Image (cartoon, rainbow, N blue to C red):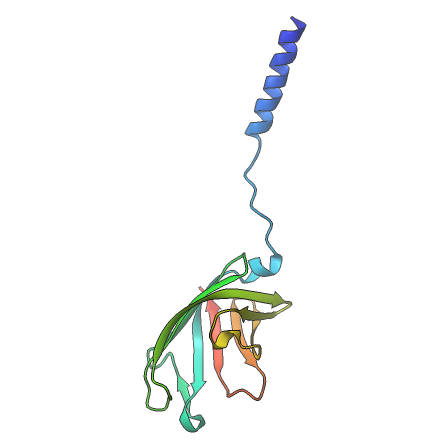
Length: 146
């Protein structure tokens, strides 16, 4: 009788401990969690010929980026043909990763200009604003999280 009671008690303990478990989410870096999400360009201005600024959004262009908790970046950008833009227009999707330290975010391995070490974004709540070294032609990009 004692063995039956002990077996019932053990089964009850195992069953109750299994029922009380809640699924756990993997641990993510707090910086990655802070910036994760989908972003669209609020402002996207590039220098054209003779340093005449071109508002890419105004002429139908776009820039969309998604940052994940796993430090991955996926994006799409398009710059339509414009008389003051050399090389004509283009569309491109890209993949890569990102690094973040304090409030500075940088793309890595996107195989385009965004991975240039001179380009980085300043994180400010739900926006990312492009900053770059002074020697690079002025480009203004402000991304806002959806």
